Structures are given as structure tokens and as C-alpha cells.
Image (cartoon, rainbow, N blue to C red; front, top):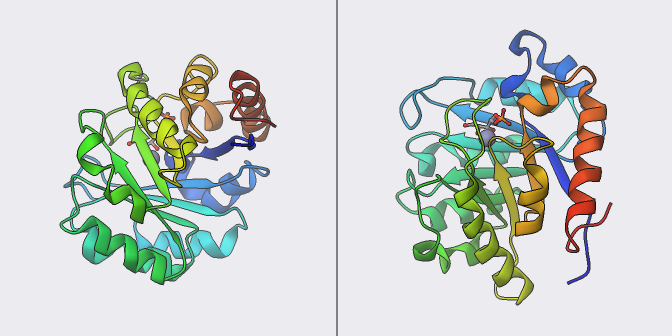
Length: 227
Ligand code: DX5
Ligand code: ZN
């Protein structure tokens, strides 16, 4: 496997929701813009939905990474792909037919992501990952920004990395939750390709500089990555 540059995806959950277009512009140079859609049912928090995502898509050129923490993604996920999101991720714990949703997302022109909560094992889902483009490993309980990284989830990252490097899967390995200057190297070493960071980016004085610094740090931490 030839090394690839690490992808950094700032999460706007930690941004100012009254100024989302400006907050997207503040992370110029980011690889993906991570948008956390929460429905107050699948997770105990409520954020934003399709109308806000549509407005944000018109306001930025950064490829959008929609992380749907919602019930019934079978019904609600494809419209995010139709709207123009780059990647649409659903939770395996919430989907009735994850492979069917992945097909619908891909048919609408987006990449399809599958996410697992910290307590959800990966093994039962290795087969269906062939139908996805992205695996999003949650390294905090989904619902809130600013939580502490759970290192145990890195065993799932290592499993996925091994299968990708062996040519058995072609997914991008993404991690979400508690990623900052103290944790990104361990995640990179375990095999992550794409790093979501909310508070570490939007809590920084210069969010764009924080993105660049995280990218450099990840790129230096593992041979599978290179800046
Ligand atoms: C949590 C969200 C994350 C969150 C990460 O449920 O999925 O994307 O914004 O925030 P930090 O990086 O602050 O842990
Ligand atoms: Zn997220």
C-alpha cells in the first residue's frame, strides 16, 4: 500500500451555529467538513437536518461528510447524498438494511459510510463493509463534542487497517471523538486515514492552522500516511 496524505475533517458541532458559512471558511484547507446530524432519538442531542446541510453545501466547496446519528437512516439518509454530500455515514445500530442504504447513497452519487459506536463490535459487519466506502469508528459515545478519547476502539481500527492493507476491503478508516494533539498519533499508528476533530479545531485560536498541525502530526506518526 503506498502512503496517502491523512485527511482532516473538522466537526462543525463545535462551531458557532449562527455563523456556519463563516465557520466553514475558517477551516479552509480542511479535507472534509464533518456535519453531525442528531435527531434526539438515536442520540440524546438534537442538532440540524437536511435544510441546513443544503444551505451549507451552497456556502462551501469543502467536501461534506454527513454523520447521521439518527433513527431510520434507511429512509432519511439518501436525501443527503442527493443534496450533494461527499460522504454519508449511517450507524449500523440504527439501520434495518445497511447494505440497501449504502446502495441508495451510492446511487445518488455519494460515498457510503458505516459507523460503529464504541461498544459495537466490528466482526459481525466485516462482510457488509464490502458495500461501503468509509468505516467511521466512534471513539466517544455519539451525541456530544468535547469528550475524552476511548483508546479501546483502536483494536477495531487495527482490524480494519489489516483488511484494507491485505486488499480484502477498500474502505477509508475514519475516527471520530476526542481527537486532538494528544491522541491523533495513536489513532494514526493504529491505521486511521481520516480524522474528525471538533473541539480541537474550533476551540483553537486559528482553526485552519489547527487543521494543518493535526495533519502534519498524523502524517509523521505512521508509515501508511504521508503529508
Ligand atoms: C460526537 C460527534 C463528533 C464530535 C467530535 O457525537 O460525532 O463528530 O463533534 O467532537 P470532538 O472532536 O470535540 O470530540
Ligand atoms: Zn461525528
